[in-house]
Image (cartoon, rainbow, N blue to C red; front, side, top):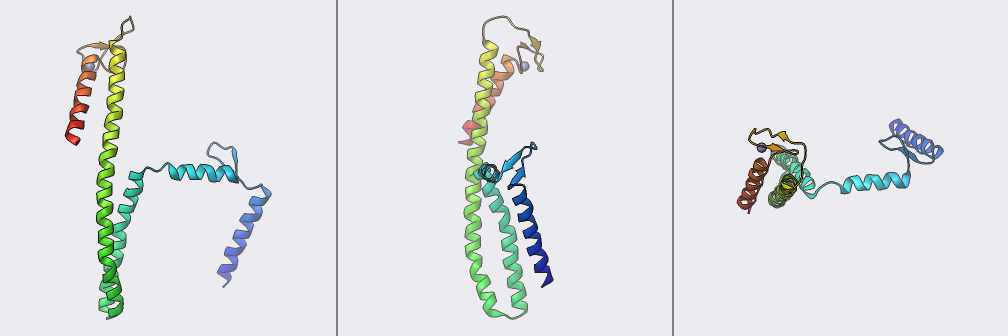
Length: 174
Ligand SMILES: [Zn+2]
């Protein structure tokens, strides 16, 4: 009983303390946030999670759920609690179907994510190549490949190879 009293007291203390401070929370940069701003930044943080990350998290929860159900089945069989065995066994197909569909979703999303990353890299390599091929003088330094000098990053030869490689990967990913 007294444990509850301590919890209630603790909550009351937190409320009083925050009331005094006008419901202010410290932001990461040390500036004070009002409750509204705090909720807004928290919401943005949650929304910042990509669908792929969400699916990954869901996928990882399945071994736990399945492990729990299977352990439950074994224990209830040993204890001869047949009605519990029945309920637990009944939930097994649904869980397996859930796992399968989450796995498929994960594979689809990973593919989309990979393609997006490749397209990003392609865009970057192309704009770098454009920069290398621009007219005009510039300070040149030897590229890592030691074949050609470049204005920045990599030389024209390396960039062309990179673009070719990415395009090939994109073609294979289709
Ligand atoms: Zn190079």
